[in-house]
Amino acid sequence: MNKSLISKLQQIKKQKYRPKDFIIADAKDGDMAMGIITPGPERDKKGKILKKYKKLDDYKNAMVAMTKSQLVDIMLMSASVGEELVEKKIFKKSSVTPAIRMNDTSDIWLMRNGNYRTTNPRPFRSARIERVSKLVNLGLFSITFSKNVDFDLAMLNSYRDFRTEALKFKFKHFLEIFNPPIDIGMNSLELGNYVNDCIIKTLAGQTKEERPLFLKIAYNGPKAMEDLSSYDPENLTVGILGGSKGTTRDCFELIKKASKYGAKVALFGRKINLSEDPITLVKIMRKLVEKDISSEDAVKIYHNELSKKKLSSDRSLKSDLEITDPILKL
Image (cartoon, rainbow, N blue to C red; front, side, top):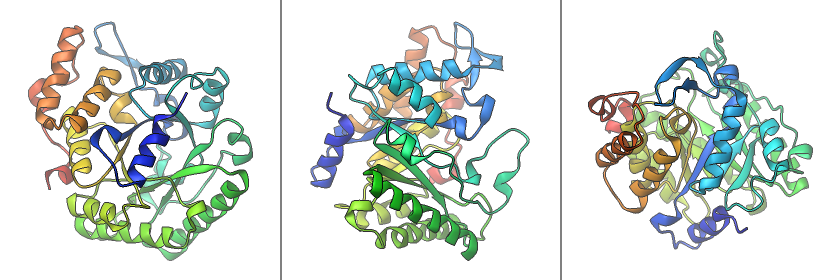
């Protein structure tokens, strides 16, 4: 089956983008970051959170269900889970493109009782492209800058080495750039400018053949998003990452504002996985972009859908309508 990602990227590259071409990825690669708690808390039949975690099979089943819904364009997985689902031919007759996380820098090591995010991030890669490329032809590579020449040089060298391998195996990728996990002495505006300039510096030395299909970055406010997305729109497609769960309003406001200022891709992990009803959430995410409804109305629609299904909501409507992420208030 034709993959929706391919046709949408073609429309974007031709400068013929329309809201229905907005790309959504379900980032189900959390097992490379959080360990046992990755699948999220278990819920009862009414959706109420229980005091225990779901199992890996539940996480896989959620991937299968989302893929069958065809609401997303990409399913991002770890190599181990991706291997299993690809071999089960989950994606063979689906418009969804399977992708695998190709590295796991230390700033995504989010294991319980760990403290890896208190220091400069280090590059690390466990997935092997010679194995992964036999399963899929799309991977995520991640780098993080932290204004330290030695650590940033290590990140750039690791990415260069990956691109060399990717060319050899004719393997496509998209590039994730996290904000630094440590304080580097910048306010939000300065941080957005710094990360944007790091991105352009990184891409400037690449030929078309080795460039990423699109970016996955943190939302650093309207100016930073608009500056980056308008810099080279023919060759640079910008996408946003979801970050922590937050409120449902945070989720919808993020996709609303990011798309308004030029993002054409959203790659959400915890915001989807930890929601009361992931498939309904993604349906409304699409409606938010394609029908241009407000994030406030989207939250109300979501709660109404939960009520129809007799599912408990984690927050009251009033609480869920709050914007708690300061960057979304700019």
